Length: 80
Image (cartoon, rainbow, N blue to C red; front, top):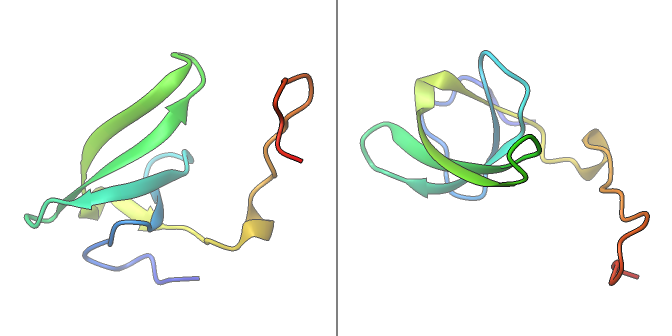
C-alpha cells in the first residue's frame, strides 16, 4: 500500500478523505497542491467530481481484494 503521507497524488490513484471513508479516484493533478477526484454518490445517484487539497486526502490500497466487488444482481446487461 502506498504511503498516506504523500504530498501529491497522480491521476489514477485511489484516495480517501482524511475525515471520511469514501473511496475516490484522482482524475487530474491541478499542479497547485490540489487534485480533482470523482466518486459515485449513492444519495444523489450520480457521479461527483470535486477538487481537494492533497493534504486533505490519504492514499488507500489499490488491491482488488481490499474492496467488495460490485453487485450486479438484478441488473440487465450485467458483465459476464
